[in-house]
Length: 633
Image (cartoon, rainbow, N blue to C red; front, side, top):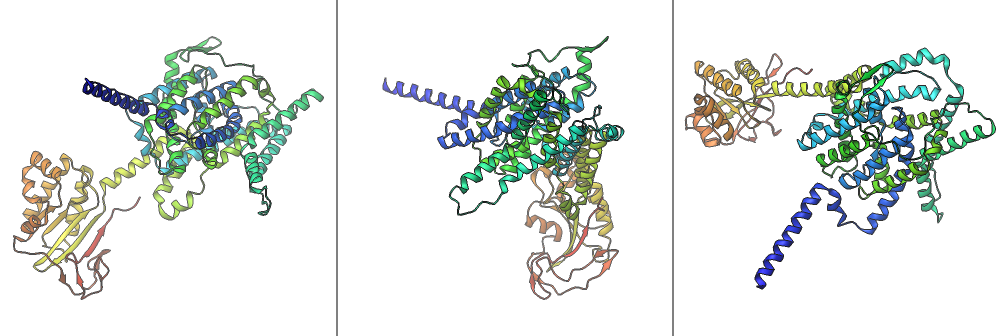
């Protein structure tokens, strides 16, 4: 009886353990909360309050880019923060509106009314969930650092150009960087000096408050640490402080002068935004835009925006915590659920922000729970402060956006690329200019496609090392491709072998092709190997392929069995095929050979690969090396 009870208890314990493990896999919060400490709670609470002070003004400012009110911005921050607390895996991430997401949203709804933003947000959430279910999030790995850097810089330049009108009090509509510059030139004579003055003062104030944390404090003062923390907190809260002072200034003008010498934001009513389904028809006058028409106009944004959001999250994780493995599926789920819920309040797509993540990293945040406290602060602001947001001047909002977005421009990458990789520099410049003049989504596609072209080129034109190897019983030529072997490269390998092995110092030698670096094979490649073998048989030259793996042997047996006798996977077989089982390979003494160059090909080398001087004992492969490499693009 007791044995049955013990067995039942064991099964229950296993079931409970498996259930907890499965729950932790689906909801990361369950996994890490069990080891959560009081110290972690205090650190996250402080981080959450600090991030909340940054997130509130950013929610108002970034949603203003897409002509949405403060209520939609704050609500999206509340929803995103709460969702990420339970489903997020990167502790530095702070979910909410971002400049990049707002700009991309503005790019896709430029020909639609603002009530179409909810449909775009909903579509982004659905596409993100599909990417997560199908495990397609790895596509972000095809976006290289130069492409992502150029993309981010293009977004920053476009935002800077679009914010010039609010900063200077101008009225015009434009979307692309080139359009903004053209419209600014046309309307430059209409600059409102009240808006410009307030914008400049706000920007200077933000810069000075950002530098206040670097003020020198006497090391002997006993309150030095407390003062340093206080100044740091002021610097981190500079957006909230500056916008509060701007609101006070607006209230002063309205109370004592009856008019305000600059543009201010629209009046926002108290309470939550109205809830409605995002898939609805909209119209203007006698024109009605159906749901199908909207989807056709927005579908590219529904694909690009989730990928960009995931790219931002992966970049943040790699930048601030390189040892942390990003769970791409959970990041997609967290952003997708947030966007789906936000879409019912006609909010714009949200994601993590690099600026807020930098603050979280400095504060030494411990877990995604800091998002919960930031979300609570945004909810309190949404509940009690929305009637006062109309006091915020547009010029001050633009100044806050400009000072924050300048940090996104990655100019430091140019010099290293110029010195080390002209190819990557070309891709960066191409992506940047296409993004500025044709739209950031087109620029991203062009950048990724350019990278893929270079990758295909490397597979089609691998570097091939041809060596003359000397042993006690004879010489032979060794051919070593550094990559392959798929159909674009087999023809190139054949032509390079034909061209190089006809040189005088390699003529009539048996040939050994080293398959060590072959990553895979296809039908065309095996047929190409058979063609090479037949060609060398006609020339009465021995050729073998060694260091071949089992996959190549299996494919040859299925595709062309005539190749099999010329393939080996070990040294004994290699010797038997190449030297008719008469040669024992070993180290030999080789005198220095004369160096002779023919058409840029180094026929002999003054030293062996190990760098030893002549007349010294050298390894088996004393190399007379010729490197063939395709012309660089």
